[in-house]
Image (cartoon, rainbow, N blue to C red; front, top):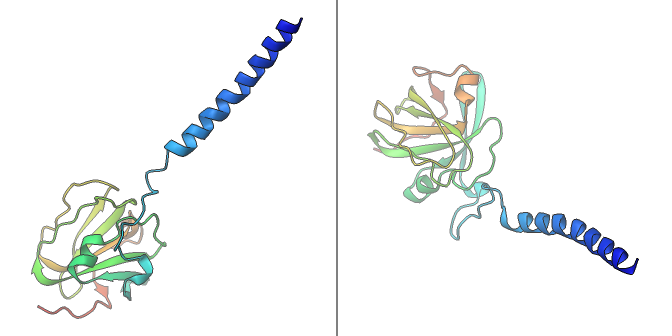
Length: 169
């Protein structure tokens, strides 16, 4: 009887301990993909200058990336955007500026624009990919928004974004 009780207790202990150990192991090793830390020197979202833009009747709260360091970081490491929040990229030359999504944790839509705010191209971008997303026309602005934002608002190439900052060319 003693052997049976010890055996039963041992089995119970193993039956309880193994699932708990597995949960503990999973919790310490399976960090979500979006839990990346911002690297030292990276700007916090609140540190970017902001501008209010309009697209038709929609008001956009956009962080502005107007220098090389800010454009390079863009929306990297962010885990969320508000429903009408995005990032405006400002370039000092009229060219075909390409984008990719390395270290960008949320899927985005991008609108490429001329200096007058006319949208020339819109593209959808998957999170954490290195595919190039290039416009078919030269421009000086790009606006990244949550994926599907432009489509859901009926915003298409040929329409204009208003409230853009002046560009120095």
